Length: 178
Length: 291
Image (cartoon, rainbow over all chains, first blue to last red; front, top):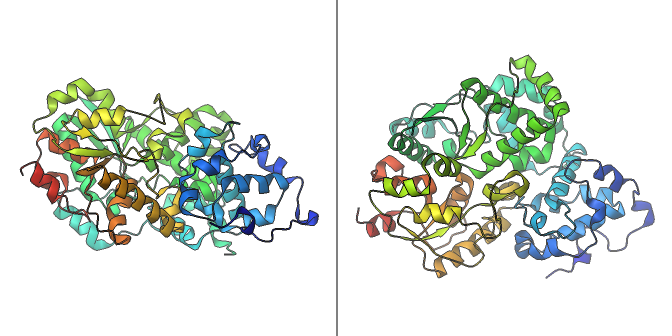
C-alpha cells in the first residue's frame, strides 16, 4: 500500500503553492457547498470501493488538498477521474459533505483548465458526431433489424451540435492539455 | 394495464445489448404496456462524462430529451441506471430551479423546444412496481424462475438518496422482492451493495480498477452459489457480462437484465428475450429451467 503522502506530487507543501481563495470559490458551486465542514475523519476513504482497489484514490486527501488551496495539484491530478459516483461516501459522511459532488465540481474545473482524460473526450466527441456515446457499427444496426427490432430512432445530431456550441461545450472539448 | 411510456434507449442498449430492448418490447406487449419511440433523442447524456465536463451542457442536453417525452405526452421509462439517474436529476433540478429553467429554455428556444416539467422519469423497475404491483406480478408468472439469484441493484437506482423514494440505500429489499415474485430465490452475498466498477466513467478512464471491482463482486457471487446475476441496469449488465471476458475470468456467471428474467417468468421464449447474444452464455440457466 502506498502511503497517502507519496501521491499527488511533492510531500512538502510550499506556502506559495496555496491559493487561500480556492476553498471559497469551490464552496459557491452547487454540490460542493459543504467542503469546509470536512474534519478529515476519513470515513469516505474507508468506505470507498475504488479506494479498496486503487492505491491512488483517497477522497479524504483530495478534500484536504482543496481546503489547503492546492488548486493546480488537485486539478491536474489523474485521480479526480477515479470516482465511480457510487455515492457511498455521500451516504456515510458524518458532516453531510457531498463528496461525490465535490469531485464532480473539481472535474468541471479541471476540464476548464484543459485537463481531461483522452477517452472521455472521445466519448463526448462521439455524442456530438452521432448523438450517442458510441459510434454504432452498421453491422450491429443490421443485426437489430434481423432480430425483429424496429430501426433505431435517429438522434438529431444537428441540434446536439448547435446546442453544444451555444453552451461553449464544443470549445471546452477542443481545448486540451492532457 | 393500459399505460403508455416513452422508451428511452440510451447508448449501451442499441450499441451492445439490443437484446435488452427486444426483451423490453416483448415483455411490455405481454403486460399490455404501450411503448412510444423517442424520435430525435440523444445520449441522456452520460452523467460520468458530461456532468464531469460541464454541468450546464449536461443539463441542457438532458432537458432536450425530456422535452421530446413532454411532446409525446407520456412519462419516460429507462432500462439503465445511468440514463435514469441523469434524466431524473435533470428533471428535478429544472423543476426546482426557475432561474436555471429559464436559462436552459433560452437555449432550447432555438430548437423549438421548451421544458415545462410535465413528465416524470421512471426506471423500468418502478414501472413494474407501480403499474403491476408485486402481488399482481405473481399472478402473471407462468414459468416460475427456480434459480438462486444474486441481485445487483446498481448504485444509481438508489442514489443520490435525496432524489429517490427508497427507504434504505444500505439494505433495500424492493428488487429482491421483485425477483422473488418471479419464483426465484434472492441469495445473500458479500459486498452485495458494492458498485459494479463501471460508474462515473471509471470503466472508460481506469478499466483496470473497474475490472478489479467487477472481479471481486463476481467472485463473491460465485462463492455464494448463485446461478446468475439479475441487474436492472444496462451499464452494470455490460460490466458484468463483457467484463468477465475483458478480465479473462473463468467464472462463467450468466447475467440477466431484470426485464429478461421477467420475460422468462412470463413464459416468453428465450429468442424473444435476446438470451442468445450475451458474452457469457445463459445456457446453464435455461437448462436448469428445462428449456
